[in-house]
Image (cartoon, rainbow over all chains, first blue to last red):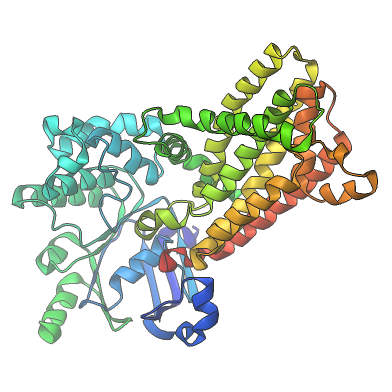
Amino acid sequence: MNQENDYAIRVKDLYKDFKLNSDKARTLKEKLLFSKRNKVDKVHILKDITLDIKKGETVALIGTNGSGKSTLLKLMTKIIFPTKGTIKVNGKLTSLLELGAGFHPDFTGRENIYFNAAIFGLTKHEIDKRLDTIIEFSELGDFIDSPVRTYSSGMYMRLAFSVAINVDADILLIDEILAVGDKHFQDKCFAKLHELKNSEKTIVIVTHDLAQVKKLCNRAVWIKDGKIKMDGNPKEVVDKYIEICG
Amino acid sequence: MNVFKELYRYRELLKTSIQKEIRGKYKGSILGVLWSFLNPLLMVVVYAIVFPYLMRMTQDNYLVFLIVGVIPWVFFTNVVTSGCNCVWINGNIIKKVYFPREILPISVVGAGLVNFAISCIIILIFCLFSGIGFSINLLWLPAIAIVQCMLSLGMLFILSAINVYVRDIEYLVQFIMNLVFYATPIIYNVSIFPAKFRWVLYLNPLAHLIDAYRAIFYYKTMPNLASLGIVGLISFVVLVLGYLIFKRMEKGFAEEV
């Protein structure tokens, strides 16, 4: 009935500028004395983006480095705010922009699961319920009770990914973090994403792994220089993208 | 009302960051958390030795008189000075994930409140052993503490947000706090001033709060409800205003830190 409810994310006429100042005046003295340092150049990262993502869609954002894909994801999670335009989000959203936010190196893996999951907005009870699944997914075994600083980077990433993927959000935003761990773990991550996709979750993913885009997603959006260049069937979009940029 | 819903959803984060705030501060020291209570006590010892000679204090039970003023003051000044950079130092998390940013200042005040509650036991011990004893008026304590929390949180909202953009705030606040300490009747009684100048001291909301604490602990009387009410109202306005300013400025946090 209510059309508004069919959408997970609605982006309308969105613009985002970034300030570009190489030597920023940070203290009061610098602000007063070097007033010319306060002059900033603006870069237009995103220009007039309008994008509706329906509930249950798995959307890939593709494009070259610096085209604004990650910025768009950050705007969706409310880490940064648009210069102009609106973003409406319908449902609980979790973003996996950078793994291991809030990890504290001196605490054990188990304790960090609690810190990290709390940042994602889970309660203690909810974390307790997921703890075993998370530990099992991470395949860390006995290392779970060692301080995180003793982990290898692969172990660190595995733990972080396991927490984030088990948060159980309606909308999942993922930014190029699937290059995690070895082949075996990557396959497991994609299997999990397929599972989430089939359980009617909305997924927005930024990736350069075009083969996976074709397999996983049912829609691809190509962003070029801050504008939507192409939007539609992943196979068509990816092929066109490879034809022009590859 | 959305604010409270969001905070309720993130209550686990609020809880863990209050814990981190309490334990993290004296991490690595042998006495650990004990320092949060030793610090004000040592401060009191110094004042109790120095000021009676310096100022010819004739206050009965000067030690208790001091403690009752110093401990709420330490609560206030710790929250406001150490909380100033609470947004700034969490920059790396702010850039990575979304969570209600107001959790950062709120957990600083929350941690301060927990410390204060425990410190109140110290005040009570001193009241008991100095022969002052207790009275039913101690029941006013939560009300006074809530007013103080609102005031500190409101100020912290404003200061921690501005501090992201202008880093001088932190150092400026330290200096001003030093000044306010002597302008607030903590180590002295207001009565040492001529009656016609006292109103100047009472422009400072903290003076009313310290008076209220002193009333319930030291004089065992009711706090002056009229002045507590007015300070409560002012604190509430500061809190709402501070929150609005914080909300407005937070949009730039991830790009500035």
